[in-house]
Image: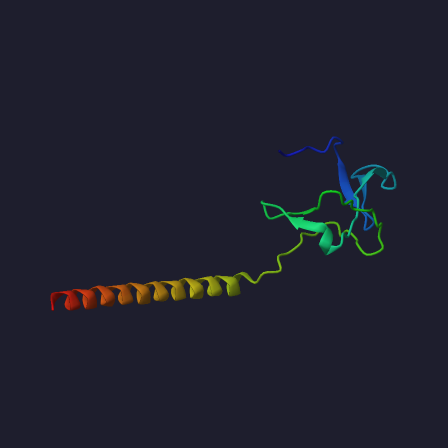
Length: 124
């Protein structure tokens, strides 16, 4: 669902400390309205559990404390990039798929040899 910003001709600005503000595009540029604040947390790894959907969540009974800007900051206007080299991972996937096919061929050839040997031994 796409939400529409309720104030026309305003932009959203997010400060490094997580403060969300509405800045007018026209008129007085110094009229900034603070809309809210993003809670910045940095939970310890032992407090996180991987969910079935692949997302990490806090374990039951653990709380994420607001640490302010001590160790965590927000950078507005940027998208977080992936830490995966897509080309290298595609090459790796193709290599693993070929290895799998080769192993399956070895297994089927061994099975055919076994059947042929059993047939020869049962005839004599």
